[in-house]
Image (cartoon, rainbow, N blue to C red; front, side, top):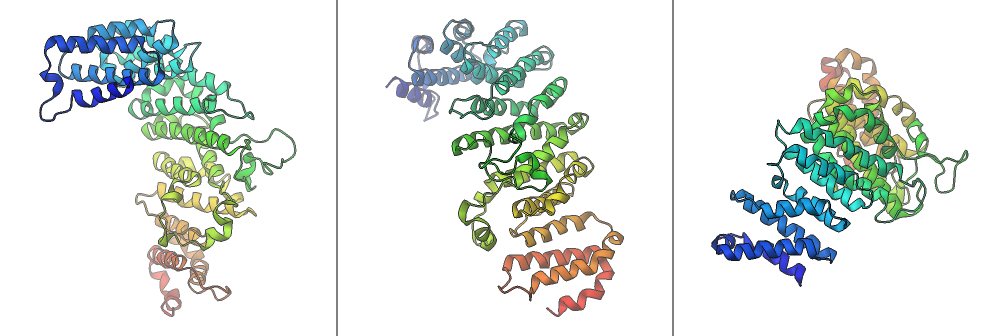
Amino acid sequence: MRSFSLVLLRRLLFRAAPAVLYDQLPKHAIANLERLLLHALHREQAPAVRRAAVDTVADVANQLMARGRPWPALQSQAFTMALAPAPHDRASAFAIFAAAPNLVMDLRTDDVIPVLHRGLQDPHSIDVRSAALRATVAYLDAADSSQLPAAAALLAPAIAAIAALASALPPHAALAPQSPCHHLSVFLSVLTPLCATHPALFAPHLQSLMHLLPPLLLPVADSAPTPTVSRPFPAALAAAGADPGPSTDFDDAEDHDERQTLRLTALEFMLTLTEARPSMVRRVHGWVDVLVRACLEAMGELDDDADGGLAAWLSDDPSANSSSSEADSAPALYEQSLDRLAIAMGGRAVLPPAFQYIPSMLASYYWRVRHAGLMAIAAIGEGTSKPNRARTSYSVHAHAAAALINFCEGVARDTLLPYLDMIVQRLLGLLNPAHQQQEPRRYVQEQAITTLAMVADASEVMFAKVRAACVGL
């Protein structure tokens, strides 16, 4: 009931219907309301009610400050709670600072920074460190040009808090819902928006990040000298053409999901920083290489056993189904990440590390790895050319044709001519595959026609000699 009352108060107090209720209250009613809210913030013991109290107090504080009315009693109580013995008091205080950063923006940085620094290093409660990290990000994001140089010192303990969690991450043990893996994902997600808004703050810490993030991005290979039943091919060999397999070091599906979430979160952190300041990360040796390898390895992690395996995947017509689940799958997310990396860094930075792995991927026995290699070429091609073209084909043949489009967009005509006859004959074979027993898929034919048009445009007048073969169709 107390939680519901706080939620209801938060919704009704500042709703304009027809007049704002708060603005109609007499001064003594407002004073009593503020006193009751501060009492609930400090005295409430039930976690759910305490969270509701924090949300309501922060919302009221923001509304008051928007009206030019400070709340000094809250400011004083929050600082007292941030140093209190009880962890839930400290966590609530930092949650207030995170949700209402303007509460402390008028204070001296020398008074605010030590409190946030202490919260980031709290030795007893990870919830306190998490709330302090949110408060730190909110403070840095709201800091003005005079406050930011001093406030930037908070980034070192923030990264140190993440590094401490990473060092405690068990490589093979089962992961609980509140495991270091879970908290690592949360901490990285909290810090990621700051990469976009204030990328320069991370410049002094790039080497620390290079030590911290790659082990979270790249799947951990089996330590045993021989393959295991759960992982017949270590992931470190995936980019060299071996089958990465859909499984990870964790046999349990829930544990695998936790690790996959962490990998994607770490990838998003690095990508966001890369997109925000490409020139800064370009100087960091190995930064782009790690991102490329992580994307290529994960793109091949398609599950043969899921949804009918390869046969169902090949027979599926994407034009007749919604592609939302495909676009949200982990391999698709890594493919999109490779595309974003190519857009941010350009082909000269992405192609060399990518083609350390792609040729062997295309020659792999495993269809998943071949498919990943083709999709990598298409993604890099799209990322390094101006237009973005949606890839609508989902078989290996259609993906190869789509990748060829991106290649032709940027290649010189004289480079293409020696291969013109072979390319056209292969594309014509997709249109009318006489050697196949089954009828060709319509979307494969559509992709082949689109690619033929691009090849014709790229080769110009030299396409005339093969025009008759196309017209005959």
